[in-house]
Length: 308
Image: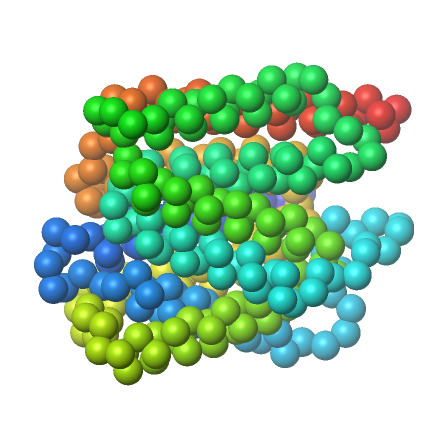
């Protein structure tokens, strides 16, 4: 029975990571300027993705009663973060993510996003009373140095504006994840934040359409299907599966397993979009992942030692 449960957890986690990576590939495919007029506007993609995802998660938002988070222990968690804070960080993520993929390939965007997310959460963790072990600082220093190397101006460097947008998206998602750890009902609170941000995006979309900005029309083409797939499958169902998987994983395991997302996104971009990462990106990616892994491993060891 234990082996069966472990296998089920592995499969659930693997499917979730594929869904997370698919968001990068689907977004890049929908926004690809090479499609000409068939490419979707970033605002349109963000609205469709989040609106569809919010509808999928709507049942969680309507549920009542106590729904304790995966981190629930004998001591009750702190009250959930204010809705304006979670919605604001989610808005930063969704807008930065969508605009960045106008000029970043799927793999490069994913490693930038993932690196910024983990660094943001690491910086937030420095405020914890237990502190941060020296080896964790070393690992995060390596990851940050690799990201700086990746985005330094020069041959093979990604577009700086797009890179900045994705790094901002990573900060937004890192803050959103950090705030979500305080929630008694993470799925429900996430659905509420998604509804609020989807509403804000809808208002922005209608205002842009009223001003006659080009490229906002929604056409029944592949880009529209990719945006809906990103919202319904990769975002809505992916998040729902992640919430079901988290109670089966330790916090360190949940962090480490996400190291696979940039790799899966790069493989998906190469297979589906025929993207070939630059030599600089290929050199920096394993250093970013190695640095994050070292930091997570050091933090896990320190936590285990303090628990003895």
